[in-house]
Amino acid sequence: MGVRWGVWLGMWAVLGMMGCRAPAATVYPSFRTAEQAWLTYKRAWQLGDVDVLRATYGGNLAFQFREELEANGAAATSAYYSRDFEKARFEEEDFYFESESLAYLQLRLGGPQVTRTLRYSLVRFGSYWKIVAFVLVEPDP
Image (cartoon, rainbow, N blue to C red; front, top):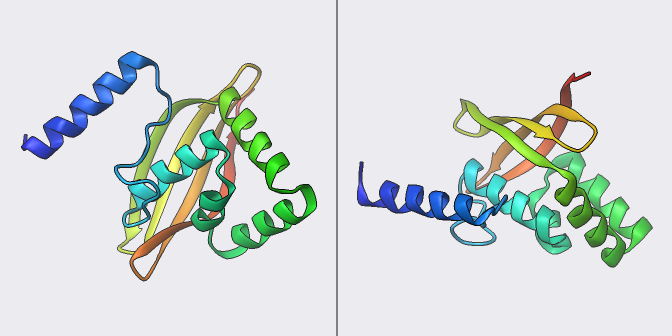
C-alpha cells in the first residue's frame, strides 16, 4: 500500500471515529474524477451549497435544479437539501464504470422510515464529471 492510500485510509478512519457522514472531497469542489464529483455532491448536499450543487448537475438535472431554485429561492433550496441530508443514512456506495466517460453509482440509503436504492449516472464532460440522472432501483418494503 502506497503512502497516498495509507493517508487516505487513515483520514477515512479518523472521520469515521468522529461520526462524520460525508467527508469533503480532497479539494472542494472537485469534479476531476467520478468519485471526487460524488464526494463533492455529498458535501454540497450536506451543506446545502446551492452553487456547488448547480455545478454538480449536468443534462436534464441541471435544468430541473435551476427550476427548483427559481421556484423556491436559494435559501429555501439550501435548507431543504441540508435537512434532507440529515435524514439520510449512507449504507452502501458502489461505483462501476461503463467506459472512460460513463460511470454508475449504486447507492443504498437508509432513513428513519424508508430504505431505498438509487442509481446515479455520472458522465464526463471534457475533464469534469457531472451527475446527469438518478433513478430508484428498488423500493424496499
